[in-house]
Length: 184
Image (cartoon, rainbow, N blue to C red; front, side, top):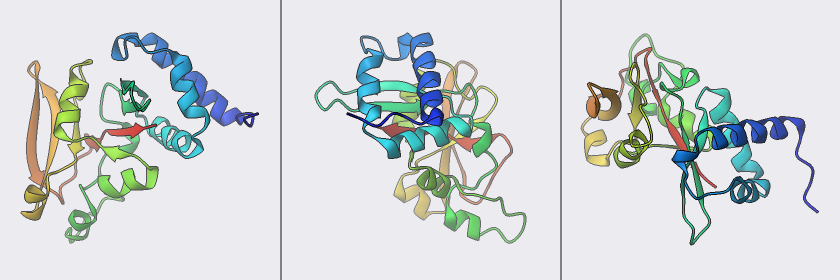
């Protein structure tokens, strides 16, 4: 018999279920029971989802692979999660700042949470499910050839479309954070 979830995990599961049911168009033909079954045996994944939730990400199911059973959660907060803003892209970008260093880098914070940054294709797929980052922007997993040249990419939604731009990896802004995903 599986262990009874802690009160914290029970509250998280209730929040996730409520969001799942409210936004059914994000995951048509998928039952909450299927998602719950994946989560019940994955305490590390629950911890990662808790970190996504606590930092303002509002994670919800955005994909399901019927063959493998893998369920994908993605940050679905309207704007880039508030608890993950004002960060450089990665450690190298952070270290290259001579002054006014932010506290975190997006890549390192994602790793510490146990989640992944969205890449450009995943970000564009998310935008098909709603309007995200209309006032903010989100760092995206940057291709190695761009990062090698000192850059990093980020995306946002403006003028009725998705834009992906570039910036120096050392830059940071109060309105730029990162969106994450987690496969369970």
